[in-house]
Image (cartoon, rainbow, N blue to C red; front, side, top):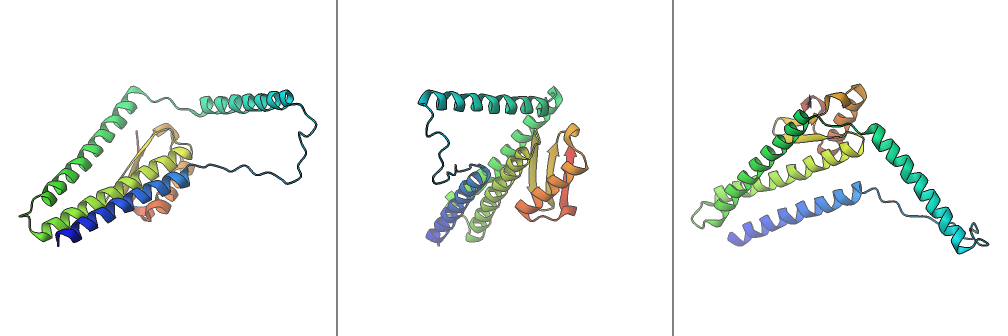
Length: 194
């Protein structure tokens, strides 16, 4: 029975790692460059011209993206920074506490099997929720929110966002994103403004 539980815990950890790798890959947004066969754009150009042209194009793109980021960037107030820092710390401490207790239960040989199974399920649930929360936050920030914090529990999902960024459109984006990632119904999604 001990081997089964060890394999179960290992399987859960492998699943969580696989989910994290998949989410990282799917959210990275890397694009592969495509070339057209027979393209002769720079056949007669000199190397220095090509380098200068590419450098100039890169500078223009970087300047445009910097301008866009400066315009769209919302600065957090001291209260907002404090809220997000405290909430992230509290969430992390709570998750670590449950994992520590479960690890303690699993390490004691005299613990009944039903308690060990319950502890394994708690750890698996926390790892799953942690991965989903991270995915929600990363996706919402990629969609334009400056800062957000999500939390998942048995009642549904909540997300804290900046008050200045919340409107009908972003509210729908938030709910649709959470629904697509977690499959939680819209009526169980709470949006809190900071």
